[in-house]
Image (tube, helix red, strand yellow):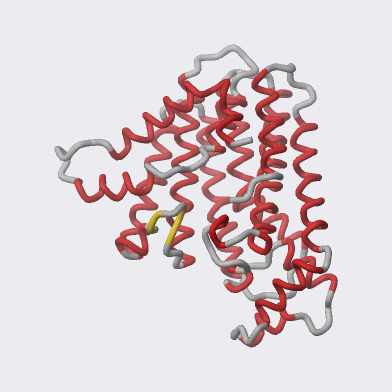
Length: 325
């Protein structure tokens, strides 16, 4: 099943989100910002899955409400996600994102940083339009968490003395925090009772954890065409992901990851590490851990009424385990 098939119940709302995203860059030339609009169009008119805004809207459909506010919030959530991608690509020197040249590779790193900042700020203006202080505060906290997760990844790069606790903390901040906020804010803006808000927040948290672990697995298991980067690229960048962590735990002696991190040169250690991960049962173990988070996400929905929106959220949690990019 294609991920967009899961959005059937909210297609009209997602179309509204697309229109709001277009409004950010289709502003004509009257403001003298033709180049900025061109760059924003390049960034925002990308074939993303819109998973996070879909979660926001789906989470809002369990309580009677004005549908406009969740759609505004869904737009803010997607803009925040896109801004982080622009900055991530700049930090990582990535040449391509979703089959298109990154802003940093096409217009330079300085432009990319400022464009990312612009999209960050734009996302905040949409959140302010909800006029909900709880949501505004949570959104601000999420930006802090996303930044902290990225800084952690930089500060702890090439460090083989890595713990699972550090890993869980980093992937929550870097990925799951925005999933959690997407679900929580949709529920809050719908006026849902606190019990349902917490259920949906837990769903988003666990789904985001599963999502990132699957990403980490694909770095070893996927092809370059599927994941848009060379296999083992995270490891080459010094990022300890779950498969790498399991490899370090399982083989404390004569480990190619340690040599790769210490020597600073490949010398075949990268390929050796990839081969060991692929042929030692580590991929199934990491997949099982991701599946546990996916199951926790689905179980968090138990108190919610059974309807088409709940079924979409359940299927989305299952789809995360099957995706290849």
